[in-house]
Amino acid sequence: MKIQTCPNCGSNRYIKSGVVNNRQRYRCKSCDYYFSVNKIGKKIDDYYVNKALQLYLEGLTYREIERILGVSHVSIMNWVKKYNIKRPYNYDYHPTYKILNGSELSKYFQDLDNLSGAGFVVTELGDKFMLIKWERFRK
Image (tube, rainbow, N blue to C red; front, side, top):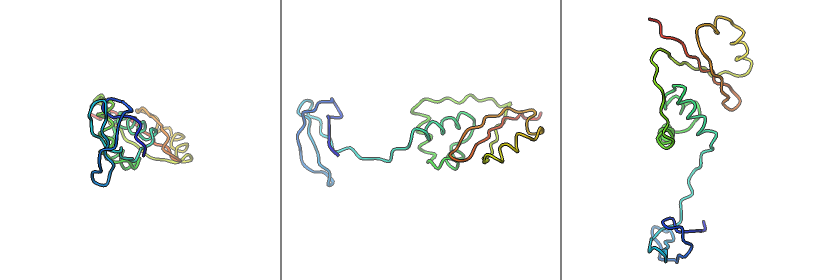
């Protein structure tokens, strides 16, 4: 990978300065900062970040989101911290979710018993749909 600028000061005045752990090391002439070639990490698509944060706000746990999206629960925790997401806690409602395909979703909504006493959010997950339902706790 080609280095464009110094990660410390942004200058493009740098020189090679040895090899450390089989990686080329550089020194910035402007700020005397030593740095190496950036690692190429696995970039997760922004779609999954947005979907994970939405599901978190809907009340799902990190591990539930991990099972649904296939993204590490630690990554999800880091995104929640990074974007400073605060989930409002309301203990009067209890979210449940189901993952359905298109025909199952239409059958679910045709049954009137499923529609009373709850709120719904339907979100798309690839070729399936996730139905999140809030029901009041029975007292």
